[in-house]
Amino acid sequence: MTADVAGTRLDQFVALKLERYSRSHVKSLIKRGLVTVGGVVRPADHRLKEGERVVVAIVETGWGPAGEFEGWVLHEDKNLLVLNKPPGLLMHPLGASWLKAPEAALSELEPNLAGLLQLARPAILEAGTPRCGIVHRLDRQTSGVLLAAKTPRAYDRLVSQFKEREIEKLYRAIVRGVPRDKAPRVEAPIGRLPGHRKITVTPFGKAAETSFKVVSSCPSAAVVEAKPLTGRTHQIRAHLALLGHPVMGDDEFDTPRGRKPWPPRLMLHAYRVSFSHPRTGKAAVFTAEPPKDFQAFWSLCRKARMR
Image 1 (cartoon, rainbow, N blue to C red):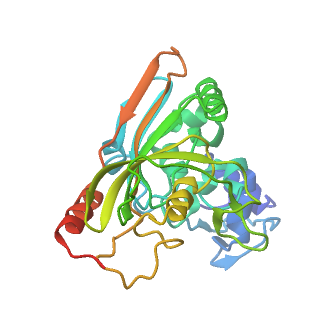
Image 2: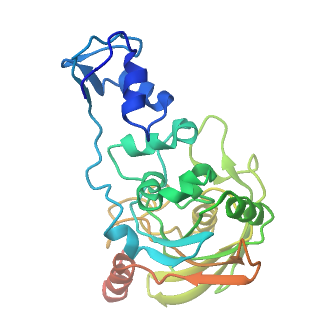
């Protein structure tokens, strides 16, 4: 871009030329050294000279809206988008800057769902839908069914259902060992110990309850269905660890890594979600079968002599 009016502030010029970026996001790009004037990093209040060359370095490789994203869509209508999230996909950038300037999610080196939704479904953000339509989250390594709202009204109604515990979620997990009780139920508070980051079962935590059911088993592992009755972070993982059967591949609870076979990721999958459609109020149920890596690892567990 070439400055055509002398005396214009750098941040004003870039925000004017790149209409999809807010001025606050432009300032963050400048502060991070991603904007240069004549090859030199300048502050946001730098006054441009006529003819100066301004370059904005924004990495968007692999962020195209077509291709893989469309393959994740399980259902879509004017109000709702239901995705089958692949393992390894980050939900959104760390921190809160993307909430004030959603386009900040697009400047991340690593693709994330907040940015992908802006590219693949720009109407969501154009409608003023909060959080790019994201109404709940799955851990980066967790795969499975994920809901996104396409309008502010749908967002409010889905968030309300989550808050009132009217949405039922079922997960599938491959756990280490085989529970003796084939349908255990755990009621134990979840939270962080004072001075620690790890979320675990602790009397300092918030009330949490999960019901489990063994779906399939082999001598040293099992596929367990988990139904969280509350919505605490890492609830399923912490409760399974309390039972002595951690989710395989869980860096927090399934150690040491010398155990074999070791999975390629956390073996946790959001299998089914049941809720009321945000517009019609009718019952809606969406299911996603576990991905290939989950199924392949379970097959390996059944064949291998685990230790």
